[in-house]
Length: 251
Image (tube, rainbow, N blue to C red; front, top):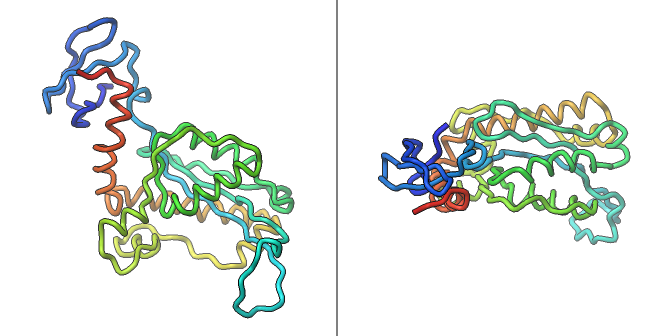
């Protein structure tokens, strides 16, 4: 596997001898020279990019009626927890997922699946999600700190909702609209009752939730060359290249 040029991100590189114990390379595209360790591997130089999605439970409140009102924190009777997550490494067809067991769901105990998604985030250099920065990551960070877990290693974030709003003047920026407009695999239909059943720990409904959000991750794969195309280019230039330069010795 040939390394990617840190200057122009081209894979058209060739060996150019050894210098000070490092393998020298020359880029045939931009003519720059750079070095990598002798034990170079693809994993050591190319950032790991993770698409992910989570689903949360409901908050439970008490109140004086169903009219429009401001719900205060002391009215919370049951806090939110993570029901399931799904994730996929870029260019990998395998969708990974985890879901609470019926017992965990009834006890509102998500620590086990928090640990499994934490491990993936900790390995990632870049994560991709639709509204991931405002919703998914903030929810996960709150659950991590609530369970006395350390935050995962730092990573860059590509939020496809922000990308769509910044780059396009579309009639809607919801994932449901974007996938339908581009005629891509769409979200599976669901309703409010699914969340009620998942909190009750019904096994079939928990598996349905996993299937629902695993399908969302497949949508991210389908839109890798659509809504996030511009962001991918900019990320390569502004974020991935600096990562590469830290791991390669450049002229």
